[in-house]
Image (cartoon, rainbow, N blue to C red):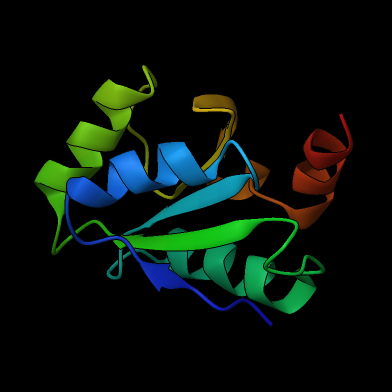
Amino acid sequence: MIQWTALQNEGQIAEIIQLSHSVPCLIFKHSTRCNISSMAKARLEQNWSFSMDEIKPYYLDLLSFRALSDAVADKFNIYHESPQVLLIRDGECTYDASHLDISVEELAACYAD
């Protein structure tokens, strides 16, 4: 089961970058009004196989924190999409996926690299 940490302020971006040097961090950007986003979130939650020591998951509610979502996109130099996952390792976004491309299997493959 995923133990989400809510991403709610820009100061947390720096915390994620720092933490990502010891454990990869996942940011899930979720639109609470979007059925595809809800499906992607449910697929992650149903298939999650990582411990908190392997990947630290963060949840970003796009409707409540759109400016923060834009700050994440700017910081990691990625195009904003919704839903979207970003895997942060050693301070960099090493993997991102959106919509139905979001899967635990893909994350596991990236994690193993």
